[in-house]
Length: 89
Image 1 (cartoon, one colour):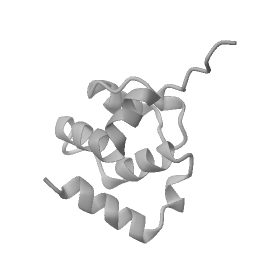
Image 2 (image 1 turned 135 degrees about the vertical axis):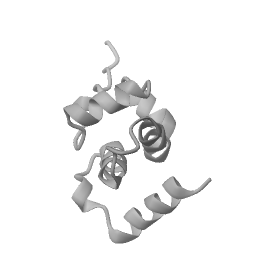
Image 3 (image 1 turned 90 degrees about the vertical axis):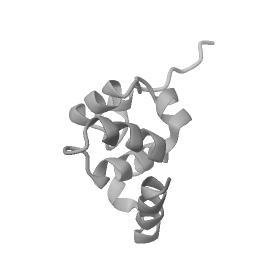
Image 4 (image 1 turned 180 degrees about the vertical axis):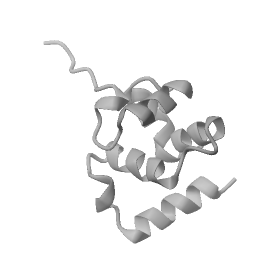
């Protein structure tokens, strides 16, 4: 039996074509790449490449994609923790 291949980031919930392009620009080409970096790491890489375009919505979308949820389902506490982690050194 063949192992199931994980979807491309653009096929994950919350990740559309623009976000997929930004992820690809940052060298994130599949779900495994995204999982290895985590939402915060991926967000930081993409934000560094596109500082004027990327918003916190990408961070929330990445986290929710990794946990197979819609980004609006993240609690205010989860969003605050993600923001703090993304802004930390």
